[in-house]
Structure formats: C-alpha cells, structure tokens
Image (tube, rainbow, N blue to C red; front, side):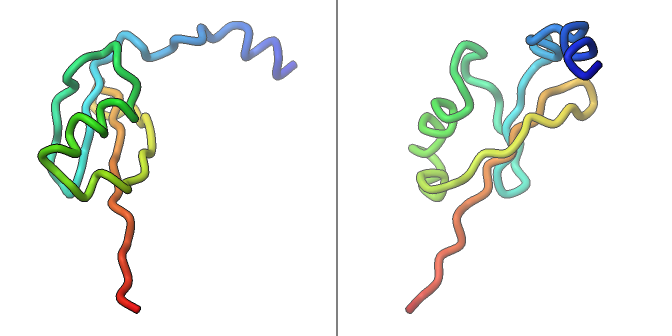
Length: 78
C-alpha cells in the first residue's frame, strides 16, 4: 500500500515552490534554482566562511517556500 501512495505523489512535489536558504537567522536568496543546495552553500561560503563546514537540512515547506537551513559546525578548543 505504501508503494501505491508513493506512486501517486510526483517525485518533484514542491519543486515549483521558490527556495530560500537560512543561515544564522539570515535569509539568503536562491542564486540559481538549477544548483543543488551544496553548490549554493559553496557560493555563499565566499561571503560567510563558516558555511565551509556547515551542514544542510531541509527542505521544509514554510509560507509557500522550500526552506533549506545551513548550520555551522560547532568548533571546540582543545
């Protein structure tokens, strides 16, 4: 039955929604919808060096947008 439900949902469900990226509370515009989230992260890493080792989560659908969140890696002194 699960395969029947999955078959009914298009693989691109939500793909027509605009994407935004969030980092440290700032919303970053999608530079190019053809880029995957990791490529977008690399583009923004030039302005936000902490993105270099950040993780990507999402997308979450919020307010009619696909929201990806960049989370910087926690550094520890040791």
